[in-house]
Image 1 (cartoon, one colour):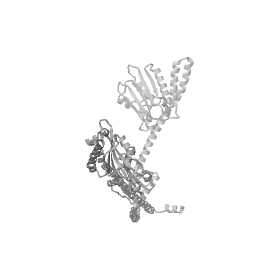
Image 2 (tube, helix red, strand yellow):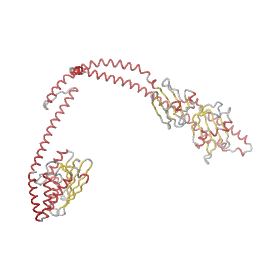
Image 3 (tube, rainbow, N blue to C red):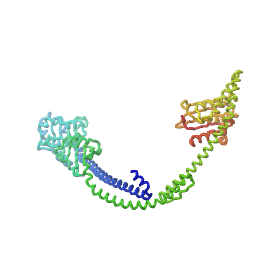
Image 4 (cartoon, rainbow, N blue to C red):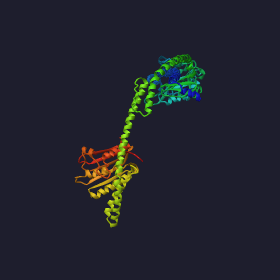
Length: 592
């Protein structure tokens, strides 16, 4: 294994490229061949499945179209005055009830023969039943009627009760044996509707139109998508209405089709897949009957062998061509790669002023990218150098500012204790505040302090100024408790407060007020310093600098320090108009 690896490493670049290109092209051809086979299989599958879905939908549409005239015919007894009057008759109070019944029976039968069978060839038999006298007032089949069944069982049938319960709405009855008109109780499906008095809502009876299930085959062509494709029609009771096998009629759909069968309603469609077959369903809107097609999987893919052979032959031919192209491409790529290698050696030795100088082909794109990268790298090094130089200068400036604060801090402490001994409490308080300011200024171990420390420093600083400008101004703080332990740069608030006291309150008649608010907003920390002073002009904004000779930290210094430490996204902004006060807003990142 090691010797093989060493041999591969020592191969010439051109040989490596030829081997790599050949391997990649072979892999590509295998992927393409597999992809084409997969695409062919799935496109044929999808085409057949789509055809089966459309066929099922067309069958359900044909069923709805064929049943629509029957729905209209089921309203005939209500719309025909003679039949409607017969339905309301009470024969028990008539002088000749048998004569009247026979006469009415002939009238209704004549209307059935002359009207119903002209509008639909699906109708096998028609029955008009009167509830009041429990009698048949009209029927299409005059040759045979099971009177015993009619007297004892007809009105107790579940579908008869359902028709009467619907109060005049049509009912599509699924498969059931015709025990009334068929001596052999042949299976039929039916359309029924209760006959209702439109004024009193009284049930007068019902009309029942039977359809022989064998007649349903006229509504579709038996399309065989494959040799063993099966087609079923299932009613709303999940029973088989139609099957190629007569013995399956009337059986429960799950026992015939399998557990994958799901009853759906409302003109929906559904396709299911298991290990052996595809099950496609579509539902009728009028009858809620469901067309189901089952296509065996293995039969969908029998015609693929020829196509797959063609794909293999094409792959072999393209493979030979790819080896030749690999040799040519490898030779073309080697020369510019050698140039690129030499240039990159110079870069690795520290020469960043190298220019690749290749502009053609893919290597040219790489060369342009490297040239651009080297340019950005040189600019980045220069920018970092400048930023570090500027930071170094600021640090030197900060260190220089610490010399006097240490000396003054020790001296002030001596004076403070002398004031305390002599009982000068005002002087002691002022010196304590000034001592705290000097102590904070003298801290050099870290540029970051907590918000608490920055606020305390600012309070001590304003307390000193209050002794100097007695009752000229007042400073208030609104600090969110949640941000007090966050960290920030030192000396951000003091220069802004100083500018408000020394400049904003100069020559004003009212008492100066400074409000310092610190809170968290989105993903950054906001510090607002606002005053009610005279404001500053746009020119003054640019020229504003701190006047504290101890630390020399002004507005420009604040901006620069924030941007150097946190980036261009953060900084200081001043909003002010003459005679309207000033608002200084500092935005820095949250540092916990």
